[in-house]
Structure formats: structure tokens, C-alpha cells
Amino acid sequence: MRWFLFILIILTAAILEAGNLLNLIAFGQGQIRPSVLIILLVYFSLRAAPEQAIIASFAIGLTADLAGPVMGPNTVCLGLAGSLLAQTQGFLSVRRPAFQALIVFLTALLSITASHWLAVLKTSSANLAFSIQISNALYSAAAAPVLWPMLNFLWKFLCPPVPGRTPGTRISHV
Amino acid sequence: MAARKIHVAPGTLFLALLIAGFILLWLPQSLTYHLNFLFLRVFDPLLRLGRQVELEGNRTHSAPHESIDPAEYYKLKKAYENLSIQYQTLHRDYEKLSRIRKEVPLPWAGLVLAQITSSTRGARHELILNRGADHGVAAGQMVLSESSDSVIGIVQEASARMARIRLLTDSAQNLEVRIRRNGSDREYIGRLTGDGKNACRISLLSRDYDIRPGDMVFAAARPGVLETPLVIGECSQVRPDDEHPLLWDISVKPFDDAFAQTVVAVIVPLTTEFEKKK
Image (tube, rainbow over all chains, first blue to last red; front, top):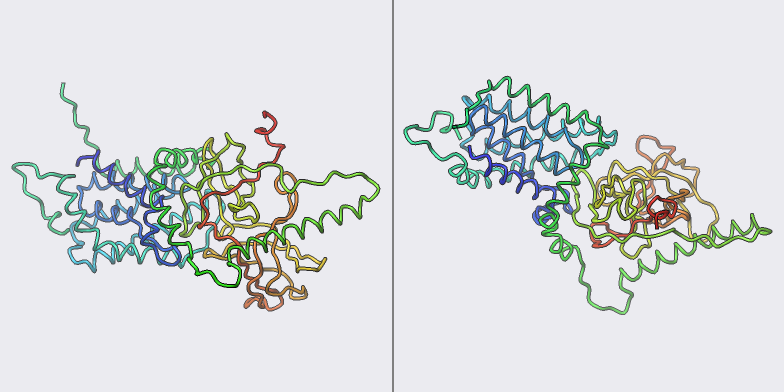
């Protein structure tokens, strides 16, 4: 994988999450926004080779922490979620948009909730906005099938095919 | 010489990164928040993108009528409420210390104007300001709206050049407030919390207290932070608490929409190190 390009992609996603641009497509007075980093996490976890998927997951988690107010919770939760997803590559097919949306929704819901509670442990200040977290997870799920083809396009530059090697069965699932 | 490719088993790699993540998590927030501010500072111009468009969207365009413009009305109302409570505070002080010559207390010691570079409106309600400890901004200080007449949030943490503001509507917010009716001397003490949307709530107040919609809510004075109470908003809904019928469940509508601001003012007390140096 071309890691420099990967870092550029996740930094762009982090800037979108921390900045104001996503507010332009937000609902509920700007409170409900899709999480681009979670969609990237699911995509790379299911597409990259296991070692690369693990590194990519923790890197996305670290970037999510940088874009947020607390360091650590997303690194742990997104890293864990991405690594677990990477283990399902052989038997999880996400070619259909509905499956993509479902996996993104479950990953977003679980990882956002878990990282929220880890952040509470660290800072002792709890935001009790579960409805917003669920709505964000739903919005991320809805946005996943839209972003998926773009990520498929970017993947050609991230992981150009090596001459003499054919894409394995793992790639055909995505 | 060609670089040697290091091969690490996926399990080992996962464990190493997970341990690194936990170390990052267990490091104190006072150490790690500098990294968050570093990210905000480095990508500041990119993070600002879209803010102007968002502000334009928030702005309401109304045709001129015979009646007063709502923005003007609220501005005057806030000014009136602030003057009113300052007058009452002064009057009480005067009554207590009528024999002692007393200097008129300044409403606040100093204001630092800061531009909003970014805002978060999801589970957290926060603003990022382009002023930090170098300008005297520190955690715990009150943040006022652009016209400096109502409280909109509190500084949560500050780096040298930036600060993170937790807004009153954030569900983790907890601020001591006073509820007072116009023309009445009686005031009630309560704790204000954000509802995570666009309003605030005050709970745990007995229904014996005479509180009605329209009563004013003020941030309580705190020595060194806020010398006189300052208006926040008004009680928009007062109803019995569903779970505790003997208590009020009060909704408070802040006067100013923090997300519609471009510039805010931070109250910087004169007693800070920054002012002493000056």
C-alpha cells in the first residue's frame, strides 16, 4: 500500500470531521453528520491485507483522536474494530450497498459508543447524546454506498496491481 | 544497500498497537490535549472552510416591518436585563455598605476578542477559538457572545494560541445560575445543563419556587471569573418533572445562538498572570 497517499486520505477525512464543511450536509441543526473516518475504517479493514488493515485501523483511530478533543479512545476502539473486521475478510461479502450500509452502521454504533465511554473514563465529563450517536451512525451508513465507488477508484492508486500477481479471492468480496 | 523488509506477525502487530493505544488513553488529558490543538493549528485554514457558508445559512433574512427587528429586540432586552441585575447588585451592596465608600465594581475585568475557527455540533457542542493562553485565556473563563452581553460557554482547555469552548447547550455542561423575574428581588439558585440540542435545562428545583416561563436566567457571579451575574437566556418552558413530580423541569432558551457567532469575547480577569505581566 502507498502509505503516503493513505495518510493524505485519512487526514482529509479528519479535516472534514473536525471542520465545518460537513455541516453543509448535516441534519438536525447541524448535529447529525456522517463519519467519513468510520467509512474509511470499514473499507480498508475489508480490503487491505491483514497486516495493512491492522495498521490502517489504528492509524484511522489515531487520526480520529487528533480531530477530536481526547487522545486515545478512538485509537483503541477503531483499531480494535478494524482489526476484528479484517479477520472477517474471507466470509463477509460487502458488494451490495445494503451490506455496506449495515456493516458501517454496526461498526459506527459500536465504536462511537465504546470510544465515548472511554473518553468519559479519561475526562470524567459525559455527553449524554445517544440519539445523536445513533443518528450519526445511521447517516454514516447511508453515506457508505455513495463513498464506496469513490474509494474503489482511489484503491487503484493506493494499491496498484503487482505484475505477475492476480487479485486474490479476498478482493473479489469487496 | 536495499532496505530490509521487516515482517511482523499480524497478532504481534495488533497487540503492540493496542498497547500503544491504551498508553495514549491512560496518559493524562493535560498532556495529550496539546496534540489536539497542534492538529487544529496546523490545519486551521482548512478547518475554517465552509464556516462562512454555514453562517450565511443560519442568518435569517426578514423584510422590514413596522415592528422591531427580532435581533435588535433581543439585543435591547439583554442590555436591559444586564443593566437591571447590575443595578440590583449595586443597590444591595450600597445598602450593606452605605457608610463605606465603595468603588463601582466593573462588570468584568477585561475582554479578549477571539475569532471562531471551527465548531462542533454533534454529541459535543464546542467552538475552537484562535486565542489561547498567550492572550490570557485559561480554562474556566466565561465566553460571551459577539456583542459581549450574554454568556454562551466556558473555556474548557487552552493551548498557547487556541482554546476549546464548551457551549452552554453541551450536555456535559454544568453551570451555577440564578433565576430571577423582572421587577422581583427574589432569585433562585440552580444548576444549568445543556440538552445537547439548542437549549439548556435546569432541574432539581422545588415546585415550591415560583418560576414561570419568561423568567430570566443569569450566570452566577464567581470571584475572579465573573464579578456580576450576566444574562444567559430565559425560561421557555416550566413544567413538573416527569420522574420527580415535586421538582420543576425548566427549559432555558439561550439568547444567542453560539453557532451563529463569528467573534466571541472571553472574560479575562485582571488577576491572571497575563495581566500581571502587562
